[in-house]
Length: 280
Image: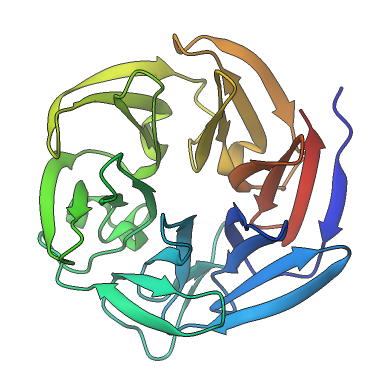
């Protein structure tokens, strides 16, 4: 059993934890449209953004890059909050002094776009998932556009890499250079060969149980940590895609994303509105 430490409570719907150079853990709050940071028992606000900030990563030059889904935030398993006003889904760039800008907002594919999570390539480009109009799932699935995998270059132009099924969500580069993407509604992780700015054919890399809905993920020391959102667990897999361990985060916890810092796995719990950590 791993012992959970609770650091922050009372959040709206947190996601996208990132370890900052000063030792803070930054994270977004979809429901409150904020980016905050935690350190030494205190929480500070970095920015309030329009829409709903979703997945987040630290860029190579030290700014935070954020997938903004346009304004959707779960209030419960049954209810979605729609921001007023909604904005077009985009990728935003946030400097640590609070200044922010739209980095990429001209996205291909069906509308609306709902950028979800991102990763930086070895060349400094951004690859991100766009599950598009996922708000219809569960109510009018026939009108779902499907997801897509996109890339934004340093010139801020966005190109399509692949059409995807289900709900493409978290993603990470494997140590062998391939790209791993979680498909939430299909309970599996898929793999793409990364070919210098484009992807090869998609293949299944790992399949989890039907209660496990892959969300954010991170590789660390040869292990892949995958949050399971409404499945209330975090899966730990080896580099071959074999399950090593499951961390039970507690009923109704909804782990949305994770990062590693200072020997601990930091996890945002969406529906519980918490930032927690576990020892590695």
